[in-house]
Length: 316
Image 1 (cartoon, rainbow, N blue to C red):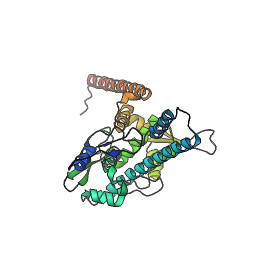
Image 2: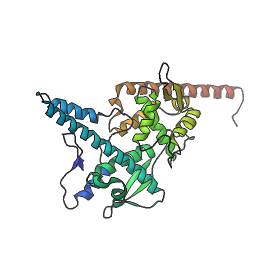
Image 3: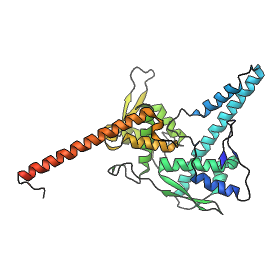
Image 4: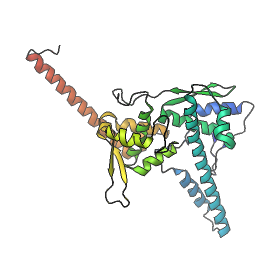
């Protein structure tokens, strides 16, 4: 497994024995990746973390040369993390494209065509790619053979609600919709259009460029999701230049519980839902409202059934 050094630099592989690389690779797919970033909460703390550490180290007076050195190191660290993020997104797309042929994918192919000189970071890269594949696209990355390092993708996507038929349990669009709903929810129930497009880019998609799973993502969101009332889309008042934002549509409010979306976000961040107290309280209130609405509907149905029975009206 990889450990993130306290300096905030890129993770460095531990010294391994004869089979160390193989074991680390297997563990990376199965163990919790506490540091795996999520595109949902875009205010990632990694850059701030690096800055905070430099500030702590800079308590003694620094001369201009020392300050420039620290700034250069921080910049290099941010660039390294951005490159790692980009490599993870590219690997996800590579695996999805390769899976269309339903042939096993080898580690050597991934290194040759995507990872390149970051091959020493393969366990972390493959683990983070597996997280994106699982929670965004509904695929589980399975290692077939340790000896030859071969992998396949298994479709594991299931709908959040059993009654949600419009998007379908095996439709990857559902994963994208839930990602957007999660972003909106964590941003205070509305998200600027630019934030949604930035999330797509972090997932390796370009909003206006064709994607083999989603078609044109921007068109899918603005036409399908908005027209089906899963999302609301409106211009933000008093913005110059004009800006637009997304919020949950009436269909999402009816069909998808906030607690399940919060649980989805929590899984991405390896935390419990109550880690976000504001959203957690709102989700609890939403669950209570749903329970009351369900109880009222059931009581109304029972009352109608009793009235029909007294009137001699039978449902058959």
